[in-house]
Image 1 (cartoon, rainbow, N blue to C red):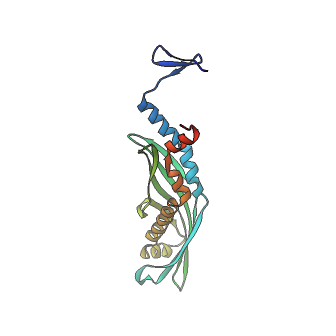
Image 2: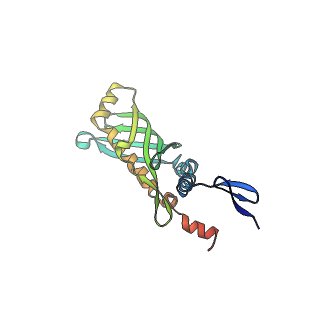
Image 3: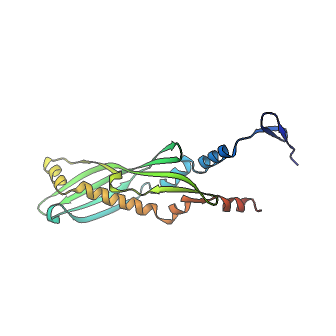
Length: 201
């Protein structure tokens, strides 16, 4: 049996090895930071990397006479941790988009790059849970840079409000992915249930 005794300076010795005490508050802070580590969060959202989707053709511009369609590819997410009153993460998901604007009489292709920005907050909840609160992206959270070879194509893109449609579809796609069961399952960590499973009462 391991020998435990209180030593000087607020420490415990377990089998002769000093183990420093920490406050409950400090233990809780460390536990949350460990449970919701940058590596764990990155692994969850890394599942989005490489996914692709198409949208369109949809009517855009005046009278919806032009048709826009696109192929969208998501890249490896970039994660940045922030620690203040709460632990949070800023997630940036790269975009690579091949956009086609069809005017019936002619067609214009655009190369689009950008990011979807998603904010995550780590929260603690009763009775003993850690919850990853995700602010689902809106069109304003999608930043894009559109390149075209012609001035006419640039003008048509502005007249057809293509940028807004791209932002709207991308935001909706990412929001739908976040709601899927494989991501929802790791957003709510029941610490009590996992502790009971590992160490039955």
